[in-house]
Each structure stands twice: as structure tokens, then as C-alpha cells.
Image (tube, rainbow, N blue to C red; front, side, top):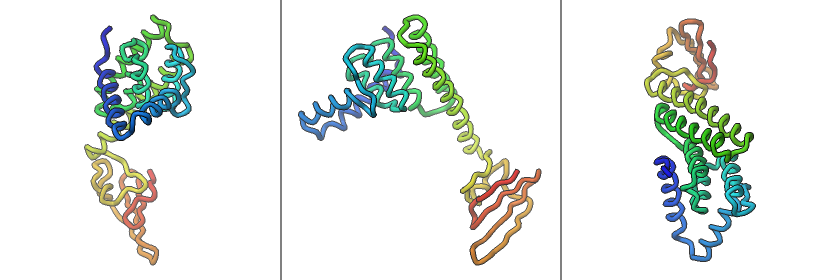
Length: 215
């Protein structure tokens, strides 16, 4: 069975981290820690040793946002070559991915296709499980895309003022930048400023920090 390169990298990293982290423990401690981590993680219990039991624990971990632990559980049961578990590992790794939206969307589409195949062709997921996985993944795509676009815009200098932003940062904004006028009031409590922009936009600052925005 052809395995996803993404899934392999994910699992190898997790296993390496686990091995490095356990070197300071004695043999007895390793066994106890391993049993504990596999039988129950973050409230997700392993009720038995069947594939259904393991899958239930993995789905529980995904639902709780414990994406790194998904790979640990799958490897501990030697299920990394299984189509269903490989798909779930790839699914979890999407939430840990960094990088551009283009790369993420490409991997997102691959995982979505694999998820549909596991559900429709292999009947390995219940309707409720599949619907939740699909809906959560779609929502995450939208959230991540928006967040990444905002980050890239800020790096390019096109960003809006935010509460807590310093005056120096606001001046660097290509979409706001230097105001048309500044109304300043100095009192014993500090310096209060009103920055006036075109289009009826105002930014209020106290001691050089944005406290309010009006558009």
C-alpha cells in the first residue's frame, strides 16, 4: 500500500521525539509510561485492542485537538501502514502544518480525498464521525487561510490598526500610515492623541499605544 510521505514524516518525528524524551527514564518507568500513554491520553481511553477500539481513541484525540498524540497512538499499535489510520494521521498533521496557503491547500485536498475514500469505499467511518471530520477540516481551512492572508498582508505593510499597537507600528502601515492631522492633549495622566485619517477614520492613542479605532 502506498503511504503518504506526509504521514511518514509526521510519524517519524513523533517517534524520534518520544525516544529522545524517554532516555532519562529507567526500564520500569518506560514500561509504565508507555502503558499509561497508550491506555488513556487526555481523557481518551483505549477500551480494547481491536481496530475499532484504537480508532475510537484516535478520533477522540482528534476531537480534543491532541494532534501530536494521534501519531504516537498509531505507531504504538503498529498501525502506520493501515489505510484508515494513515489517513487519520495525515488528517491530524494538517493541524500542525506551517507554511503557505498553497502548500496547505494541496495537502488539504489530498487528505479530504483520502477521507472520502475511507468513508464511502471502505465504510470505515460512521456518518457522524465523517461529517464532523469533514466539517472541522473545512472550517480550519477557512480559518487558516484568513489568518495566513492577514499575516502576509502585514508582512507586506498592508494592515489595519489594532488595539495595543504602538504608534511606530501604525506609521508603517501602507493602508493607514501617517495621519492627515494629530490632535494631542497632555495631562497629568499621560498623552492622549487623536490621529485623523481620510474617510472619517480616527485612531485614538494613549502614551503612544492604540486604545480605540473609529471608521
